[in-house]
Length: 401
Image (cartoon, rainbow, N blue to C red; front, side):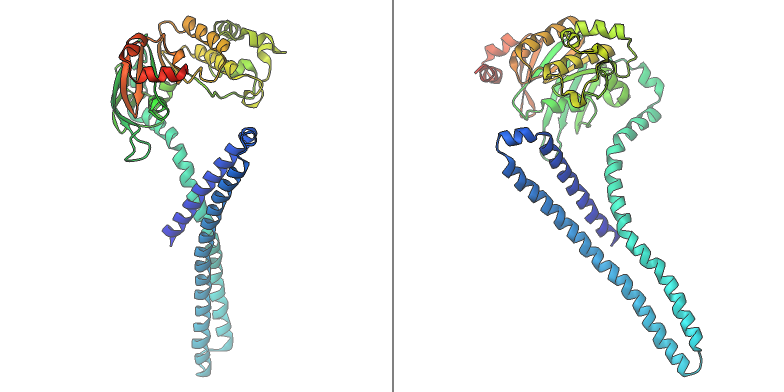
């Protein structure tokens, strides 16, 4: 019964997570939902998710609706047995009425805690199912602590992050039997800028997930400066990689604190970095400059300004490896020019990995790799790939219409 109950509660928690995720996604994008007339469709999807949650909950109630009466039945049968046996003993004058009443009282005292435990049992099973999900999410942090304990601080400190980034025969699948990456091998030399392009679903973002150790490859090895990622401390690895993404976390705090985070940079140092990142025009318009409180999610900032802010964050850390994940896919041409200028002047000598859909942003890369269905279809410079007349040329034609 315990295993069956746990499975029911586990199923309920998973369904509730889907329901909450759907609600959060729908509410955050409510204006787009209304603009595109998707309200009715979302209502139907919500109803389906909610009905599934209701059905799973009802199954759980039915299960415990069977368990609770069984507990009561045991108590009733025990009472009936004592009355039958005790009544016979009284008739034969082997037992007094007072002794029978005492037995019944003791029995009630015995079964009352059992009844209460059975009532709390459903709560315990529900809590255990919830705890499984919580501990699963905390596994990553536990893994990092185990790394430090197992491999020791010295080895991680001595491992340099300055060097080539290599992917050697990497294969990976989010779902077993449905590979996203298949036997991919490439090397990004120290100081080299490599762009990775390809159709949606080709595996570009998955490479980044593996680089940051959000997932472990099913096969193959990823190494940085000759050291396998498995041998590098996860926290230190992530701190040593700068990342500029399309959607960045913006804290409800001052612009100064949003930029420096935990780096300890002074306000004067941050001002110099802002000038390098082409963000001065935005800061000059703020009423309190760097001390201006940025609203939740950076609603007062444009997408381009958020990405330039991300560049400032990267400059604070001075990383050995820079990752641009769709960094200019949602900004205007003027902001894109600012972004390119800041990258050219600020990241000279750095190893840069660019993930992009807009091919116009990667033409000046030292090397371009084209992913298709989880494999490297082509690679070379912009001119070399155009001369091939393959997938890159087709994507470029689509990009420019």
